[in-house]
Image (cartoon, rainbow, N blue to C red; front, top):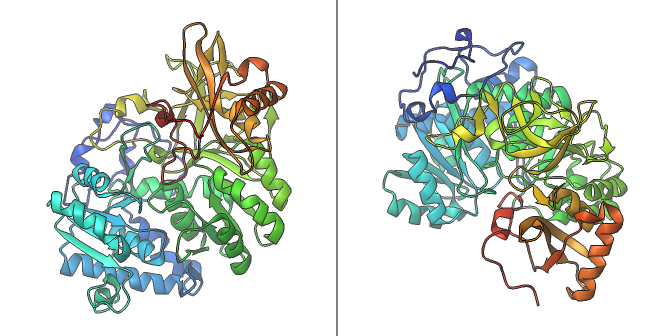
Length: 558
């Protein structure tokens, strides 16, 4: 192993069990590692996260409680453990998977995808989950970066993976699941294997997963997370803020390939003894509301845009079982928060996290929403983490000033063989790339991505603040705000708007929207340019890709 970072206590280390050293050998140099806050965490030096969360469920009295649900089946913790063990036996005994080897996982949110992920990690492999809509070229980039020998893929998504495999022969084997009646199906093969598997005796610092970033800022990066990282995350936001229980039923739309989805829709429910419902196909806004009603879901995870689209259905149909709704993945406009509260009576829980940090580190807590001159606060720092707003030199700024967010905690960024590590971790602190204001009471107000802050005629303007006002206009369905170069003002505010049916994107609408913004916030923040679009560029997880709006202009919507 590499020498430990000076921020990692020796007591937290144990010899690695991962004989394949590919990821370990491509960790950043120790001096570029983040500072970790591990005091007070009950994390053994040697642990396998699936053993901790799944195998020990019986000790907590959860063996017969439901864990994975769908319209076709419900599996208890004990039944999931048996299936995971059989798959792990198949991967190691039949297909020769060694600890530390990467396994590419391809599929939507399903019981099959969850079982495969858990089996890979329990066997000591490194899970590399990929978004289901990726094409062969994008899959090829991930294969080149992570060098998996084996892939497990939903049978419905095999074509693109086979194309990628043909061009990247390092991927030797492709297994598939979800093909009922097929003797080659992963489930059918696993059913012939022994029903018990001894978990790989991984060190807490051994690697559990590579999480590829969502591409909102350009070429995705591979964030490395250990078994300890994931278990530490379980003891932070979900335990201290969400406080899930075994009676909770969780639903949501974020993909398991996205850490927001992996934590919210698999790992964190397991840590609480709760259950997760996976749909047969992806959710529509109406479909998610109807599912919540039908199964009595209590917790929902999705992005702000989806909540906005769900609101009219929730208001019409009702969602009486819901007790908490978690929003993350992109900035939550206050207009969307208010719309959801009016529709359901539930005050949404906002949060900011990062693939590099695994999950949420600043969040709304105990339903408290703070509104102020800088907008609506995301919340306060999650217990176990520390955060501050700093200038370009890393010096903490006085409360009320806009600066860069810096965070430390029990998790932190380590990229796989990527020079961008230097930009993310500085002096042990993680820099997620966001501009924030912190008030005197410790509430954090999101302003923009720090490279998206608009400085116009000497004024700082945060795009999300302008977007929030635009979304309050009855004609606007979606919007995005960026800064564009201007000879006179340095930059000017430009808005891209998707209008609701029945509204025309003409000069009169431009004037109406501009006056609407001037009436809602300081007039200097109004968009001097407005372009109407049929849609906005988003990642598969629903995140807005502002960098694409700054590229070659699209023809305006007629």
